[in-house]
Amino acid sequence: MNQMLKRVSALAAALALTLCACAGAETLFEGVVTSSGATPVLAAFGAAVDQMNVSPGDRVEKGQTVAQLRTTRVYAPCEGTVSGVFGAEGDLTDGVNERYGAVLYVEPLGKYTVAATTEKAYNISENRFVHIGETVFLRCVSDGSHQGRGVVKGYGDDTSKYNVEVIAGEFCIQETVAIYRDENYDAKSCIGRGDVAATAPVAVKGSGSILKMHVKNGDSVERGELLFETVDGALDGMYSPGSQVVSDVSGIVATVDAQPGASVEKGGKILTVYTDESLQVQLPVAEADLSLIQVGQKVRLEFTWDPNQTTVFEGEVVSLSYLNANAAADTSAGGTSTQTTDPVYTAIVSFTPDSTVRMGMTVLAYVQD
Image 1 (tube, helix red, strand yellow):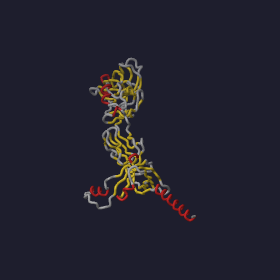
Image 2 (tube, rainbow, N blue to C red; image 1 turned 30 degrees about the vertical axis):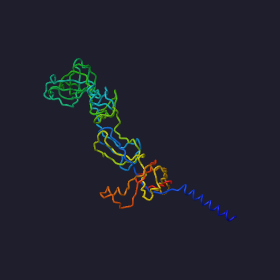
Image 3 (tube, helix red, strand yellow; image 1 turned 90 degrees about the horizontal axis):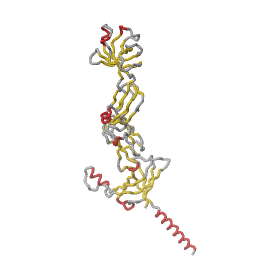
């Protein structure tokens, strides 16, 4: 009796182990990381690519700058004060120029100009020739109390008429001043007379759409200082996105479609990205194993690329192709549909990767029975 009880107990224990083993059985497949498709990163406006910061295969994060587009930069034509900014970021300059005459104005540092003539010059031949760019000295003819310094900026209707920009000194509008080459106002150096007027603000227009303003009303600027940047065409919703191209997805760069120096249209592809959401595991399934896998099954994915640890992800079978991959490959290569190799089908497993997962990685996939 004792012997029989022992046999029954042993059989029961073996059966329990067998049932447990069957309940936790798994089927091993080997797969590879692929993507369901690449997402494009587009240009917000038409421009030339100034700089590309990534290459195919690089990982990018959402919000990362991937490229820089080239803008048209508009600089201050003279030293002075910004007196009127009528353009705003996102505006078309044509509309602003038509309404206000310019995107902005700069009041030159020299607030006076003199429209002069050589008619009252001291009567020597050298005083009949005035040179653009030369420095001259001015004094009012009424009582000599107003004095200053200027620079010859250009000619009038003929070479006997010229314009002087006052760069130092205070004068009254419409008062008459004598102009000298000698800072001591020696009579023999007098090269003419003229009337003082207020210097007109310089209109700065630009073209295209305003991408970024770098100055505001009242700012002092040097000649050659950056005022604003423009790009070709209109911006969506009068919104200025900036010249940096930022990825709005995280993933792996699939292709770079615009190299530095190349022009892209508004909405043109800068690059494409295999997004994290598009990454999947592709499993080849032999015909004999089709009964072991089906849509909806849970899958344990093991990545063994790191010799020090195995990274595990949970996944799920989301599709199982009805198309024999080998026959499809034969046909696409110009062959016939005649079977030349064992039938193999493709299962797709979805999972949520982290930043360690790369395209093309091999995976051990344990499909739970």
